[in-house]
Image (cartoon, rainbow, N blue to C red; front, side, top):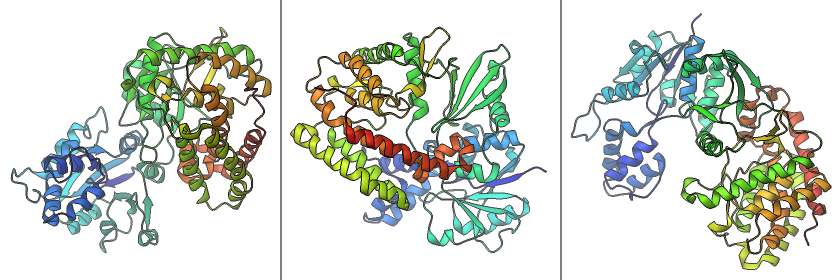
Length: 545
């Protein structure tokens, strides 16, 4: 039986944040350089003289003249692609008048919305393939609900509670409220499923992405590749990865990046750019093949090789060569080509801030075992290490290092993101967090990273191998001695990400099998954090003097 899915348009499919921003700036209602959310813009305008009229004018223009600035909400494209390959029929039902308030140009709002959908290929057979006959505009909310009733829908998705709670709303249609902010009143409505993101909506309506559906979408996106087979790769951290095979035996890695509504970092854009650049320079990384920004999917050449096991010491020189190549690259290109790495730390103060942010998040998870670990074990070590760093570094603890002292760093760097090819050559992958960072952080992270898991001998050899790559940096060794234990504490907190709801969602989406063993995973992560903190407490793996 064909699944029938209805969706509202404004603020459900189309995100108007950029449109409100542009419109308010054009009308001089907010400063030109100010970046604000829709709610912040509304609040600022309503506080102005004649604010209510100004706000109505902005609303009237946003849905017409400025609709070209609207974007698809993150996750909408993947949902619509999945509906297509699942054979579900999609209907768009919108409450929309012909013209907006105070619009002297009299731009037809319905035609503007239709043109926007055409631009985004809603009705194209090469993309979402929604029938143009399944688009409905209604003048009132009551007429909208009446239309929903006549369509005999299985689901209807809307951002307004008022629509879903209309007395005439059809009983057989399951209600899904798209809401980033969940009010207590909405939570208590048992017949409405509240979803804070389109990823949640996809799970509620269609379940997890199957291998078959991912392959079909990839085949439709990139028909020239001749893709024939797919296999999910388990064990990934935040992104879901599939191996795709083509008829000519070429293999690719398909990467589905995390939910941008939960984590807005441009992982796909960053990694695709980095792989393109590094591969062109002959470094052993995967070549970037194709990407779809609306889907948040990237396609790369598959890197054949095996995970790194024993005899790791003999690989250190190759790892150091790669780090050295990145250091040279950073001296050759304009710093504007790349932003700061994800969670970069250019000062001790920034490390302190990041640790504090993670502590606050973990304090709110409501887990006595986590709170006991933080209060009884981690905080005494942290306070001691922080006091020591501030005392030894003095005012330089708060000062950011200069651009000339920074390097281009993968940020998430360790043996877990490397393979050994059949020619004994190391290949490197995962550059989602790439950017400018402090070399002290790169060395510290690689020593503490659970994916490296270095013993005392390996840690010492690694440090003495990589330290000579940065001979000219002032106070490097002092900063390292002071900040190294703080980075270790930061990693102990990172290991507890599985206790933070948003982070756990990313983990489960990347590997759906984890949803059946969350408690065991959390217990294991807490044990790992305790072990790593034990190493920080000893602070004895390196001879730094």
